[in-house]
Image 1 (tube, rainbow, N blue to C red):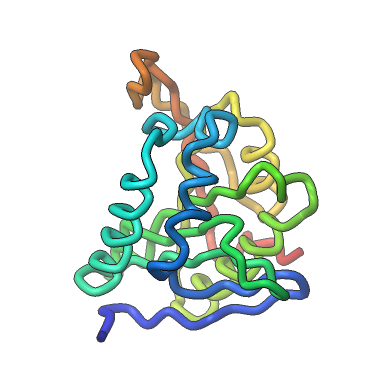
Image 2 (spheres, rainbow, N blue to C red):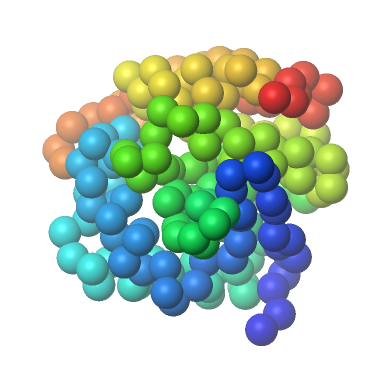
Length: 185
């Protein structure tokens, strides 16, 4: 299967970032069915395993048809998917893209999201030569805001009531990272 944009495996001290595959559906469901993880996303928590299976199929299709990178964040020793990180909305001419990520609640608070972002941001900025990466974060998600800020992202604006999730209008903060401002951890 050929992909429009090659996606290398990335390795950190505790993590292995790899392609998402069909065997990841149950682990993906465990993340996206957790209301705590999904509290600040632009869609509600999943309620059926079929939603995770459909998402895996969508990721595989997107990788084949679009310029999108979606890594499974896997625990290095077990290869268990504990989260995902994506680089999407590429504009190659402008040298920009967006980043998004999630991590299972059992694995939060250990610096693993930081390790994954370090690997992906380094790849996107250095290997792919992107000039700018953006992140769309609910301003109430302070942990996520602090995470991107430590890499050099700057809060550039507030988009009021950008998303409607479970009947609640939610704001977005747009963060931007310029290649020259990247702070490697």
